[in-house]
Length: 234
Image 1: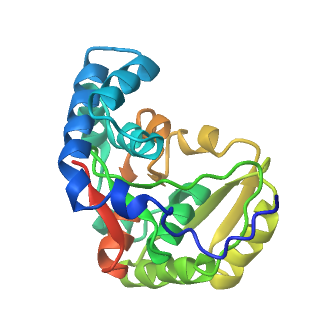
Image 2 (image 1 turned 90 degrees about the horizontal axis):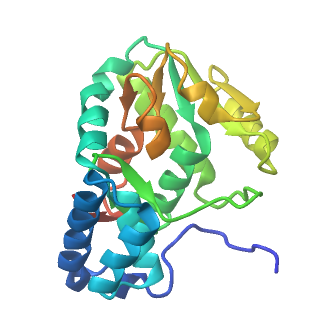
């Protein structure tokens, strides 16, 4: 069935799964899963143990998994995180789909997770093909406005070549701001973890291996999307 979605909005059960009545169990589940990760429990078995204890639906389990991290990972990520003030005049590499999907979700009313490590993450995903939604261009324009305010340095967006329509998105990125570079590469992760430029991503694997990084999604959502459906699971 073709993907005809015009927004990356909430799922039909999200008001119940992530409403105020679910927050206590979700936060407790994140804390418990983080405790297990800190003691090197395997991810799948730890998530099942925690998810079963709190009787979480599959989508809630995904949110808990994306929000949790071990104590060691938390300390490492926090030690290398910088604020938006560090963007002024400094080259930055952006994990393109990672940032854009979160902003599209925030603008479209979808669930955005405020996670244990301070990152903002979404529940959307790209499976082989990226499809533009109504919030795509507004999301890019939000980035352009805030970057101008912050005096952000040279900016390179990195997009996954295996994902269809990456080239079209790269062209849109350059159209929104001709000063931006937008590159379609086989493996953005391999570029993002290289030493050098500041990194913008919320991908856990990247944050555990990159140098200095900044939580752009969090800054953009907090400052530019005041009515976003943010669930604080810290």
